[in-house]
Every structure is written in C-alpha cells, then in structure tokens.
Length: 612
Image (cartoon, rainbow, N blue to C red; front, side):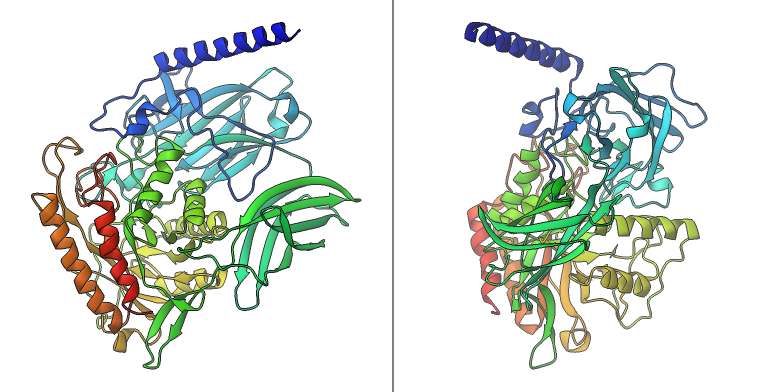
C-alpha cells in the first residue's frame, strides 16, 4: 500500500513538472531592456502564490494567477470571438513579464479570459472573486453574465459570484478593461502614453493577484483596528455581511500563544485592553495577533486572522510654539526615500513577493526609517512588510486629472489657486481616495496620508484635507506635498532640488509641522543597468560613486543644520532609478547600489541624534 502511495505521489509530481514545463514554453518575458534577478526565479505556473490579504486571512481560498487568454479590440467591438494569445496574470500587459508587452491605449479594450474548477472544499459556500487591483475600469462576466463592475486602478475589490456559478465542472470568467491613462481624469500616478523624464510607461489591466474565496452566508466583510496609546486601548472595527440578530463577534488579542485581551458582543466596534503592550516603532516593530470569530448560538460560523499594533502619530508644540511630529509621544526625525514602486520587468508589479520585500529591507539597511510611497499604491503585502520590518509610510493618493499648467506655486505668501475639476472628475477622485483609505487603514506603518503631490490635479484642498482628517483621525494629513500651500492639515511641505531647504518654522510651523517633502535627486547612470543608453538624467548628475557619495554627505550635513530649527522630516529622491531617471539609491534592476549600504547607514544615522 505504501509503495502504491509513493507511486501515486511520484506520478502527480511528474504531471506537475510536465505542466510547468509546458507553461514555461508557452510564456516568455518579452522586450526586456534590463531585468531583475527575480525574473528568472518566478514560477509562471503560479506567479505571486502568496495569500494576498495579510490583515484578514481565511483558510479557504484559491489563487487564480497564471496564464489567461487575452485580446485587444477596438472599443466599438464586443466580446472577442477568439483571443490573441496568453498573458501572465497579474503582470500588466505593457510589461515584459506579461509575456505580451503591448500598448492598449484609450481607444481599445483589453479582454481577459480563463476557466477554473471550484475545489470540493469550496462548494456549498458563498464564492467571492477578488481582484487586488485592475487599472482602471472593469466589467466582470461569469459564465456569460455580467457579475459586476468596478472603477479604480489601485483599490482591491471583490464580487460575489455565487449566483453566477453553474453546475458544470468548469466556470468561465471574462473581464473587460478600459484605461484612458493620461487621456482621462482618473487617478493614474506617473503613467503616460508617451513616457519621458519623470513620466513612465502606462499600465493597463490586472496588476495584482486574482483569487477566489469561500465564505459562509454570514461573513466578516471588512476589518481594521485603531490604537489609542494614551488610553491603552485598541478599537477593532469588524463589518459583517448578512448579520442576524443575536450573532456575536468574539475578538482575541494575542502575543504569540498568549491571549492578552478578549472582548465579545454583538457590536461591530469593540475595545480591547492594551495595557502593558509594547508600542510599535521603527526600532521595535512589535505586532500583536488578532483572531476575529463570528458566533451564532455558540457555534463558530466564520473566523479571520489579523494583527494590530499600539502606535500613535501626532503633533506637539515646543516651548517656542513650533510644531513637531511625534511618534508615540516622542520626537523622531523621519527620513526616507521617495519610492515610486516601479520595476523594469513588471512595471507596476514586482516580479515576486521576495522582490517586493527586498526594497523595504534594503531601505531599512541603508538607515532610513520612513518611505514616502509616491503617487502609487502597493499590494497589501508590501505594507505588511513595512509593519513587520519597522518602516514608517507616508502614503500618497495617486495623482490624476493633471495638465501641463498644473505647476505648483511654493511661495506661501501668494494666495493659492486650486484647479477646478468637473463633477465627474471630482466624484472619481473622492471615491478612489476613500477606497484607498478603507483598504489600507489597517496597516500601522502608514502614519500620514498625502492627498495631493505638488499641484498635480490639486483641487478643493481645504475640503479634501478636512474630510481625510475626519474620516481617519488616527493619522496626520499632508495636504499637498510641495504643492499650493493652504492653511490646512498637519504639515507644511516644501520641495527643493538638490539641496535641502525649509520654510521658516516661526512663521509656518505654528499650526503645522514643517517638512521637506522632496530633495536630492543625485544622478549616476551605471553602465549595463540603465533603461536606455542615452537620455538618462538626474537633478544633478555625477561621474562615479565617490563623487556621488561626497555630494550626498554634503546634503545630509546641511539637513542636520535644519532639524534644530524646526524640520520634522525629509524625503530623499529616490529609492531606485526608474526608466530614464537615474537618481536612485539603487539601479532600476536592483543589481547595483549607488552607495555602500553600510556607509550610507552611518551617514543617515547622524540625523536621528540631532534633536531627541
């Protein structure tokens, strides 16, 4: 019997290897200028196999990444009768790793298709079809019927497909995607149809994990927690779908195997005792596990695993009336790179989870304690890495509805003039801003929301800032990083290249903390590691690493003189090179460091001892 079992396992392994070889032959990266090391290690049979939602884990799920059918058709055409080939999901179609490498454009529709079988353990339950992100407008068809629609290029969403599932063995999914890129008003970050300079290749379609989840009829729909350091409480917010009278929500807070606190009642909002918990910080990123169970008549009908942290971000005035940013009621100078989150082989999508984590690890090793995620939103896994590794995050809202005239006026003495958006444009922005906060507010590493970058589509700044502060009072709000200045929000943010500068704290730091939202941009093209052979640029370009490092040290020395005057934070441009920009701490392919990590760490650490 044991021999037969071994033979069966061997046979299954052989079948799997044959399938993987077949897929590898079907899919190949296309048109690579340069590539990361992870291009050769990803598994095309199942790219990004990790559970994609670290803040709300369930047992019963199925990853739907892999090879799908695709077609590009004119907008006027309907569902394609035949498909053009295979695309590797979740890589955007313009990327090398998609295996396609084609531009779609606003006059065309991108179509996806695949079939799948429902696992036995999922049958009889409600089936939720999840998408980490699709850029931008999508319609999802299941077995020939439209199951749902979505607008938004950066937020995760799901569709309950239970009523669309057939009794057949295979279920059929078709997805219609339209993305106008920079020809539309929607948030799109730095994507453009004609990339150059600080603007990069457009991204269309699925660019994060697609997955299926099985849940009971009544289930936990959404979950996040808010810490109150001063009161030593953690508020847990659990939204329930189809909750019945008498259903009980049980919440347990764990430190390893030890249960610290328990609460149980019918309310969707419950308080946990957090006395004695270690506050989360970059030097000690302590996380605590959460188990949230839904009970009916004493029996568990649903359960999710999560985590939380005790963390506070706030402002405090000193004896001179100057505002400072504090973490857990103590000043900590926040210093980190501007992080674009782009990849030469996957564009918006990292080749693997290991690659996604790599950037955070190396940023930490270089002595930074913060990352400004620049006009892009990452997969949930990225924020979980920041949580576990101890990296503060300033999260930008992706820019949209920009025009060549949207240049900023950083003179605070001049009355700012915001853009006037159409009603449709404003509705899209507000909807996607709320969706971003809803999706990522559970991650303690995020300490600041940034609604606008410079004056890129900046509109109704005071109203937008006040809404964000009211909607999520647990974080600070940076109204417009380097943009048109309004007397609103928590930060007064200047951009200056290449040398660090700041506005006068005694004038502008009475109600807001003064920060330097961007500086640096020191460029060094490294032969064999550039996107193009020419047209590479930085805000200031150098010939070798020695010249570059010496200039960097000068910038840090200047920064140390600004901190005592009232500077709370600074952001250096940038983590990596991106396409023709060569002002990264690393090359675009992540194969070369422009600076020795140990040397730059020692230089950066000087900043944290200037004012304690």
